[in-house]
Image 1: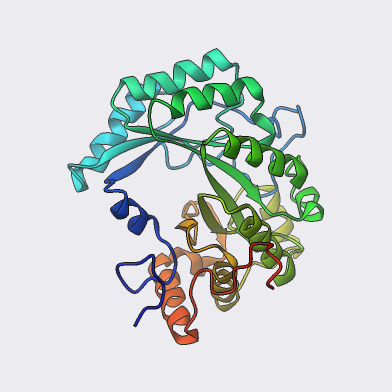
Image 2 (image 1 turned 180 degrees about the vertical axis):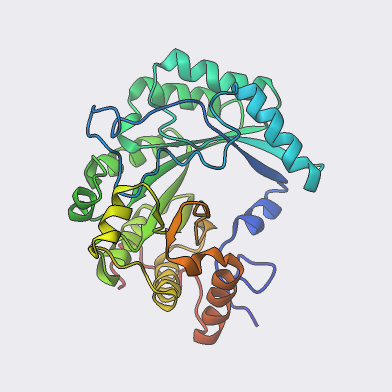
Length: 314
């Protein structure tokens, strides 16, 4: 018998599918590239981007040469071939989607809602949400479902410097607190296998999130993609990707620390197969997901089994 309460199947963590069913919500994300840049690319706080960045996570979008409306139409057609009744969430994914003048952002978000989107999901950095942007987000959140997706990656500042993230953890904490106070849903992205990190740092990141109790979390595996600074480090022998068994183990241990109510929207990422150099085992997502499910059952564990409000139950 599955002891985890937030499941309708064998999953022992709080999946997005379960969350959506409980909310009577049948939605799918339409990934968009609004032609943004990033302060870690344009020189504002750094150049070159994060060490793993291949240009802004826009590889799965229709392309910034199209308008938001055109991209949304193409994505809606793709989604509804498989799910005809699905509602559409406009997912501003590529680069930093609050890094522009407020009126530019307003026009982009408005274009998405006015051309058929049922809600918004906005990927960004915590150092790119000032008071004016926060007020804009609050305005749109009052009109339609809205999630802000924050790229944290790690709570360890030494790692943040190593990967050229461009901001300290305190900036994330402040942004998260302001979004939470504004009543805005927050999904936090973390990455396992960052250079120089072992299980201590990866579990510390999970414990830090446990203290904050985010609405949702996405757990990613670090992919070595061709053309990135990480790929150059890997070629020199300066980086060793995570092994399959190590990744399965650390994800389970991170899930054990997370509050049960936090939705786990992802437990492995999608690397661009055309650019992926390592780890090649990550191409088989079904194997990764299935092994995590079986191993959690074998250990008789579940999300939140070791949760502590202070995040110190390591």
